[in-house]
Image (tube, rainbow over all chains, first blue to last red; front, side):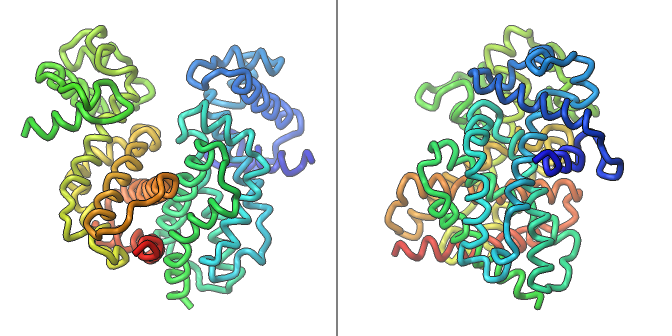
Length: 213
Length: 213
């Protein structure tokens, strides 16, 4: 199980460590420890705003200096945790779920079902961190899915700026749905939440992508 | 011009000051000064993260104590500025733009055109603050619009949880579009940005709302 986590930790853009340079195992282990330590603090009832670097480092059994070698700030750790989570959910979406039309909810159900595996983490991040910090990486994950949809359906590539708009608009919409889902204590099944989301987004996404065939 | 700003500052939920109690003019003036001072600091090239309460208060010609009487933190000031901006844009949308179908882009164009009046502020907030802080209030503004759409089209009221999902999903989608728009330096006209947004969201929103007639 170490490899996929490693890939996530090393490759997340906008964070420390670059995708080009393979990140060694010790570095990955420290990062993972810091992520786990922050989540443990949240589980104990702390709010992100009051968590200091010292507290997180101590809980991970590491020094402040090591913390700063890996992350700029506690916010940065949360972004990393969220990026891993979205990455994991998106990488588990099967190609079958990516064929058009997307309006039939298969894709939405697939994503939300995989995210539901991290329900405890989502609930912690949604209730104890500013919602923005943890859902920012959703856009990046959606951008990747969009590339896969284009490829699976053999569509011509999207213009760069249209691609950017679509990824951020759909990413923002997912973010909104996940926030309500978490705030309501995951009362809806992934299927029910996905249905509302895909009813709103599906027909327009299909129309936009079908224009291009 | 003082009255609408006053209403916005007093009525924004989740911030200090309640809608029930009318807020007196001196309080509104202090809040406005603090908002303006923060924007001036951003215009001078400061990032939100490094702005201290002392700096903002001094720029406004007020004390730290007065700052804390109005706001919890600089983030809180940004949320207030963003809430005012969305409130202003949404309150200017004419009822004509709210009739179904929304897929024809009238509504999206109307909102983005009114937001375009605040282009300088949007660009500052988008480039110098974590995007989340300033676009959080978008959901609230969309929730209000949704109520107006239901009323203008004489639709039966939405279930509370469906209303919440729709508002946050559409608010998130707008947020995504506005971020790309600002990051690209408002290169697209409001019409062009609205067209991408409404192509994605319009057909699904119409379908969902029409189910209810």
